[in-house]
Amino acid sequence: MDYKRKERIFEWASIIALVFVLIFLFSIALKLFIDGLHRIFDLSFYTSYPSRFPEKAGILSALVGTLYVMAGAIFWSIILGVPAGIYLEEFGGKGKVARIIEANITNLSAVPSIIYGLLALGIFVYRFKFGESILTAGLTLGLLMLPVIVVATRESLRRIPRAIREGAYALGATNYELVFHHLLPYSIGGILTGVIIAVSRAIGETAPLLTIGALTFIAFLPPPPWEDLIGMLKSPFTVLPIQIFNWVSRPQEAFHKNAAAGGFVLLVVCLLLNSLSYYIRYKVRKKYQW
Amino acid sequence: MKIEHKKRIDFLFKAFLLTTGLISILVTVGIVWVLVEDAIRFFAHPESGGFPKSVIRFLTEVHWTPTFETKKIGIWPLLAGTFLIAFIAMAISIPLGLLIAVYLSEFAPHSVRESVKPWLDFLEAVPTVVYGYFALLAVTPILQKIFGYFGVTVEGMNALSPGIVLGIMILPFTASMVEDALRGVPQYLREASYSLGASKLRTAFSVVVPSARSGIIAAYLLGTSRAVGETMVVAIAAGMYPNLTLNPLEPVQTITGYIVQVALGDLPYLSFEYLSIFAAGFALFLITLFFNVLAVYFKSKVERY
Image 1 (tube, rainbow over the protein chains, first blue to last red):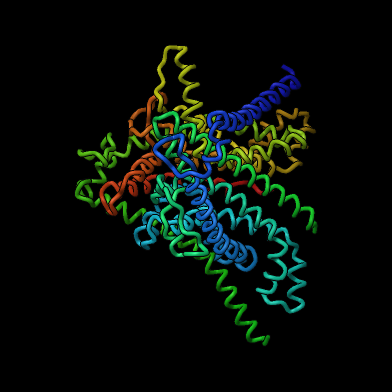
Image 2: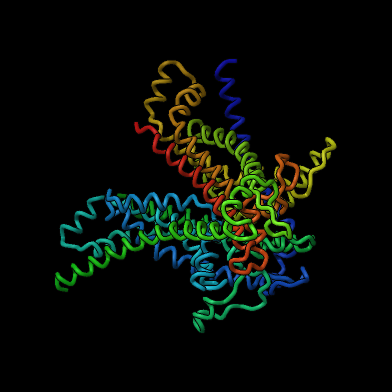
């Protein structure tokens, strides 16, 4: 067989593989949409609590729980991840400490998420006595997001040319002035992209929250943080993926419809977050061209 | 501001940065600490027969029933389920991943690559619980129909369907890592190959892929580690019955599936059931660590041109 023919066969095989994978993605979205159709456009689905009756069950407490838990996760991952990234990229150099931290973060990014759930169950829930609360869930997902934030921070710092740093030092800037006046403002877009990507992964994360004992039957809302922050942090919770898991593992088909509708909502949120990160990355690339 | 003040603030600032880096080490220490401490408690628990008998039972018994009246603690059924599903996933992910990565890196026009990449990224962001739903309520019925045509019954819970879904789920991850490895191969190797008269396809598979083999192997090892540690797809679609079998049409339970099943119940702190998920989790951690370390080793062998 001549090589041109072989090449054409290879190209067609590759394109079929790609199309197959993309069709898989679209059929997931389509399946969720068709199965959940009459709940997705049912307003009461978004304003009611879980219920024994599939037609009356909704995702209100799951949506609010997801919001609070993700707020906590974003807070912890930024406050721990961004400084760690700055340290590794700017001040760690090739020292031993920096190398150990770096290897450690690489390894953490490959630890299965359910192991983070066991960490949270063993340490946060029982040894630190935080309970099965929004605080524990936020911390857990925050730690899960940490490696992504560190890597994103480092990559966007690396794109800033050396001359900026030397210029700042030459004018007598201290390290913190360099970071706050120059490095952070120039890299904020890249860091934000990383945060959004991490959020879009963490928002669908189910396993670590299952192990710390997220409940599925929450018929009340946690107190809003501006009224009672501690009460909110200590409140039991449910999140959207847990609610979906609960519905899909029930035998009644009517609950599967709810799971599909919930899954579709989650999928749309993830798609929006992903597009947002693409948009920001595009904007940043245009703004800073060194 | 006085220069002394600035120096002090600068010192505190750097100390703060270092502290946050060290906290990430504390996370690893915390993981190892809980897993080891509670796994030791599990093996020392009277229900498991006490150390060292418990370890022998762990490695020789063929049933895993720590939650039943008669407690058997052989890890093999869970390992069989875990590796069976990971094997099916990799059997799909390795050839498809290589095909897509070689095509995108060596053949595809720039416009195709730019328009396909975001969708592959998005495939990675689809929540795992959604994949689980799809495996249970779409892939399994299709498999039942196909196999039913040949007179083979497929159970509602089986290893094949989550295995297939898992394979496609980790595909974007492995494909993009393989693609990165292929791009690390310098252009002059390709040009040398062309100048000797090799075709594009021949160059791709006889020059580029072999030159990038360490990176490709590392990508597949990390993919395997993901397949082993993935939880929700298998918890939803593979079943909840620890079954020592290599038949992909039967229900199986993985290590992660067991942890989910037990965690769904009400766990008294330090009860035997509670400790058993930490023993299983410790086994899972060791398996994934093995694959990750191996991947790091292969990555360190990647040639720098």
